[in-house]
Length: 270
Image (cartoon, rainbow, N blue to C red; front, side, top):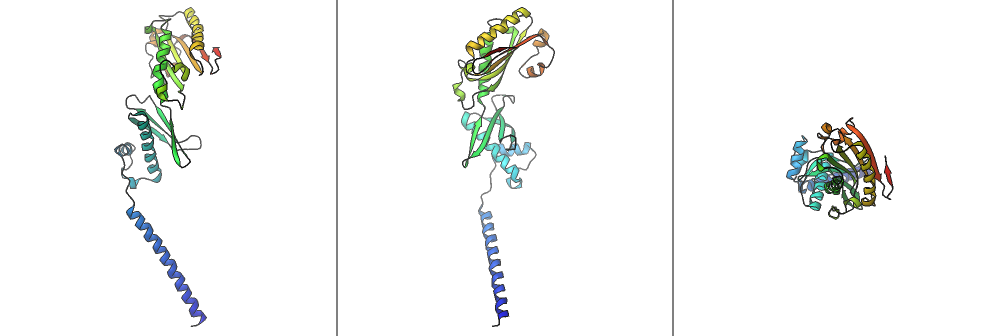
């Protein structure tokens, strides 16, 4: 056979081998796709997809949507397994340049205002979870302790107490925070609104000094702040847990003061 003939034969063989390799790879991929188990969405996932206006068939979702609906389920399952109660979804954010992956939810026994945030991070080949659920349980305990203190000076009918939990001691077991130790374990900013029907301006100044002394004796080891507001009675009656933060910007106070304690025990009065 001539050299030209041998060269042509080699080309035919090479092309045949390439085609065989491609067909083999395609065949394997088709075979893998054929045996791949279809993803079965949970009822909760389907309800969330409906609420978002997305298809409930997993195969019709984009890769981003698939990842999100899977992550949401994982985070909610983590909360429910840890605290043995049901949670409802509020929002989800993927990891970005400015924030980590996290989900917001609330316990069905509470209201949407009781927001719990779950933080998820992928490290060492697995997901790690953290949450701030402790602040929800700490809030009523903290407010109860402060309310008991304020009613030593004023009638309960003239005082409203609202606490904003800033640090519930992440990593602290939620069950370890009790009414007895909440002031030493939890950092908070507390707003104390006093009706001007039960307190004069002179009494208010004395109470501010007394608050600082009480904090020094009770709130050791964590930072805390009391924001005191002597309030017009008509406006005071309208204050509640849902609107008090908005009311802070309105001119409804006849006197105001603040006192705080740092984590190392330093007292400050403003």
